[in-house]
Structures are given as C-alpha cells and as structure tokens.
Image (tube, rainbow, N blue to C red; front, side, top):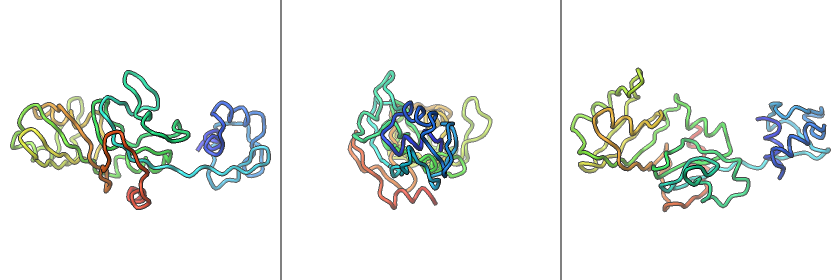
Length: 229
C-alpha cells in the first residue's frame, strides 16, 4: 500500500497530516528516510515516525443489511451514505466489496482490506451472489434455461456467465450469478422482456444475510476465510 495510507492506518493522522510528516522527513522505511508519500510499502516493512515504530490497525470485515434509499459511497450525495449506519472509528478507510444501487436492499460486505475485497469482486473468482427479484410481469417458462445458457445484454457482445434461476412465485424469483456487470440483474431481465421492480441481495459466497434492515456485524473468522479459498 502507499506510505501515506500506511501512516494513516497506523496513527490518528489525517491523510493531509500524514503527507506533511512524510514530506518533512519524519518517516523512515527500513531505516531510510522516505519523503514520497506515494512510496509503496508492505506491512512487513519496519516503518517509523520520529523514531517510533508504527503498527497498522487490524483489518476490519463487516456485513451490513443495506436499507433502500442509501448509496454505497463514503459520502452523502443524492441519497444518504449507508456508512451513516456504521458506528466505527476511521470509517473513511472502509470500502464496499460489490456495490448495490440506491434502490437495492440487502447484503453488503465492507472492509479496509483491499486484497480481500479483490478476491470477492475479481471476475475469475466466480463468487456467487444470490438475489431475490420482484418482477413486473410473470416469469416466462423459458427464462431459466436462457439464463443457464447465458444471454446477451444490450450493448455487449459477450454472453453472461451461466446463472441459476429459482422460481418462488409468478413474479418473484431467486437468481444466482457469478459476475458483477453494471446493473446486471436488471439488464438480464430486461433482455427477456421483463422488468425488475424490487431487488434484494441475500447472500455472497457462503455467507448469508442474517440481520434486520440497517443492522451490521463483524464477520467471523470462518466467514472471512471463506473468501480466500
């Protein structure tokens, strides 16, 4: 990670303050003064500030039940940020592994461990995401087979990866996908002549949402490790 990020993660300094301390020659990496805040460092490096060794805070892994009308951003914009529901120190260091639209509810994973979140979002990981989908029209009988084969989304040439569709009722289904294309679920149903009216993420990988709306908890060690397979 960048040196300024390491210093921020190991102290109570803001990014601006950390940059100032680095540029003033107060920070050393493995015994040598470094004045470039963008210098790439590793957690195994010995990093000191004014001779005091820095120890980064442990990574945090959070599961949250995202309410409707919130955005997956660190700052309020047109809608309020879901981070307003997190009573955690240094919340600005956190990011979301797999964002949801403002009107979509359900499970989000939040962390400050970039490598871990990359394991969830990288395409070749094929991490399963399960969505409960409400539709404007009754689901056609051939949609499950089409999704299993892969379909072409508007504006794209490559077919979607095989997806599993389970019919709950005429206008409600469970959809399991392994990709994370832009507005993918909504676009998949649009491609078969239907429209999503409600969207809720129930699970990511082996972890299932078990919280009420707006609640959050830390992941267990087993849940954390399940994404490192």
